[in-house]
Amino acid sequence: MWIINFIDYIFSNLSNVCYYRQTNKNIILAKRYHRITCIIIHPDGRIITGSQDSTLRIWSKFCNDAYFTMTGHTDVVTCVAILPDSRIISGSTDKTIKIWNQNTGLPDFSLNLSKPINCIKVLNKNVICGLTNGSLIKLSLPFINQRYTFLKGHQGPVNCVTTLSNGYIVSGSDDKTLRLWNPNSDQSEAIFYGHTGSVKCVSEISDGKFISGSDDKTLKIWNANNYIFTFMNDYNYIFNVECDATIISHTCSINCVKVLNGKIISSSGKYDRSIRIFNVDTYECEFVLTGHSASITCIDILSDHKIISGSLDKSIILWNIN
Image (cartoon, rainbow, N blue to C red; front, side):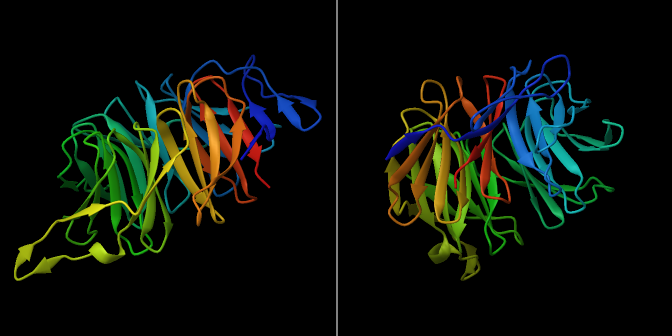
């Protein structure tokens, strides 16, 4: 296992201008004013972040432009996603989801939900949100009629949600479980047990195999392929599933996990503050990336095999993992 510091860029803000100082391979900027809570790469290569200051910001990948700020939320922006038409959608603890006009920096659409929103995922013509009351809510685009469906089953706040290649939905919760949802019936078909802490993140590895991260400091590998049953003898069966493997490496809560080219990429918080890269076949930790000085709250993957991370230290780092 190698401990390295592959920093390409650190994005920050000073007097509302994005600028940098280059030293060998590192490009270092001043700290931003607000803590980063979520991050995503737009299809055009720009970087979108959400912050505790209730705003979203758009960054140039190469940091040669001043950032663009979008205002409208009134509390922490917890999650951000990209719609099929390339518009930005976000969720917040202010109980709203918003679709943004990238020219004006103001929301084109806002929907008030019943509870604060922890996570958001776009699935074809649907948007799936995880709420703090333990429910998921599925909304059909373009929200004109504002009809939505509740997916109920978790016994604690839903912290993360992803979709599998077969269209099924996987969610993770403070109740220490993950659930598999049928996108057609909106029913929970399997419960995945094994974590001893809140499930914070989930990502598909391939073909129904997925990985989750938790407050219990572990990553767990699961396989949904054998548990996709809907109705048998006119009854809806829920299957209880245990994990295939457990990865123990981080020394603190795991906040985010992604999969890229045979590598599992995870980030951690508090006193760990590292990004770790694991082999997807052996589950061995190959690299530890360090550079943030506070909890790493979010990571995303660039098309050129670089990753980007956001942190409570108010900075964004672009890492070269090649």
